[in-house]
Image 1 (tube, helix red, strand yellow):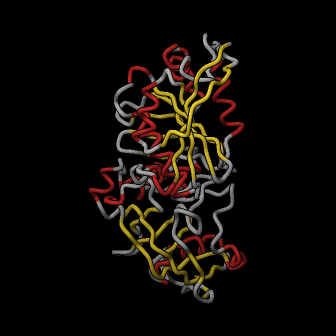
Image 2 (tube, one colour):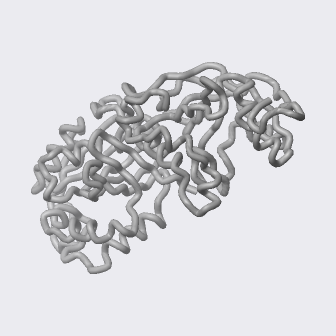
Image 3 (cartoon, helix red, strand yellow):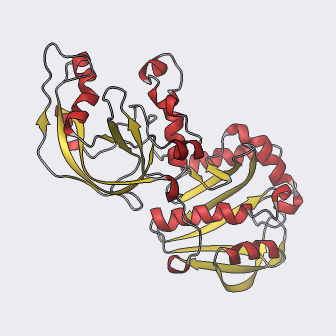
Length: 358
């Protein structure tokens, strides 16, 4: 399963387009000022073109092929598309912007986020792009992003039935001047010793993501999240209620976590800057899920993921002053390194202790 990529900037959210985006996408792609500057958008644009395009995106989406809707965070409007096609080393950048938003730096801002993702999180070494020589605005965008012109050559464009002069551009990772993807000013840096509780029969999976069908306070089915605590007793208390409920034995395993940039829900300013309501994280998530509703804490996790955080710090509901670390990515490029650093210790609960307690 490919986790739907979501990136954010100061003004924009980049996400997988939904079927409901088709009407707005159709308006943009139907505009000759957009279509005729590309080699891939037919003009006139077919009535079902946007729906079919979104369907192809969902069918083809992969780590090296993405096409993301550009959403204005202030209005929630779709204002363009940005994407890439790559081979693991080099990727070609593509974008289109609604004419009503031309001249506002949207293409530069959205493309910068994608480029930083490719370089910082995927390990790409080069990004390329092309532009018709009759489209100087696109060339200016590429220049702002640090691209160098690699040449130009005539190319037949079958959709146009004619030959156009196309300029080629390239950007090496070492020369990139794109702004960092993450806004570290709002993140807390954490590293060191942590403890993870896990079922005793799943010790070998201590660093594995949750099973695809499972859900948790900060992850939807299919999303990766690694739950842990800074103290062993806190890790035990975090699962004590589940142990008393299902009777399945669990253990605590010591871990070391490399430098991670996480959104700390103790930080009211940081939460407010990313649209996070801290009370949503305190609301019961399992009862919401059983009632057929979306747990409010998922929305907070979404905002933290979109902001580029490695994870989120959860304020404990059962431990005075306690907290837990929940990583969204680990042991991959762009995420912290997490290793096992000790032997598992069985969790033993007192017979007369509180449900959430030792």
